[in-house]
Length: 154
Image (cartoon, rainbow, N blue to C red; front, side, top):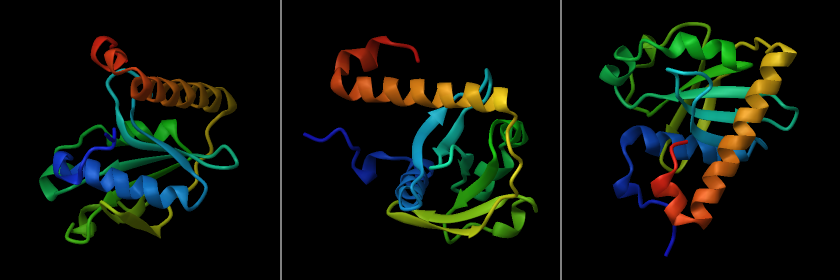
């Protein structure tokens, strides 16, 4: 039995995140989903590149999903580059200038526009690398110990 959810069990944003993660791996980026950089914020996908670069990708499945997101600017200080990931039907003219754009579906993605690079300060980068590592380790632990998934608040 696989721990990987069937696509029928995933919400639209999760399907986009899956495609984004698959694509970023082809660029040698590793990813985690739903990472909390600070209280009150949860990024859809955080990617860690081969040179230590940190990208945040927000997955938006509809106009309403995008318009209801009032926190996205708070993610900018937690990454070197910021991207939106949307599907082919999304009205991309809604997306703010000066942000990256990834076109995605459940099976893959393509970077259409690079987000501007705003390098993190060294201290902030260290914090984010530690959060990324802990988040990834906890997710891995949960795949090995199903009881952990049910009893731990992480």
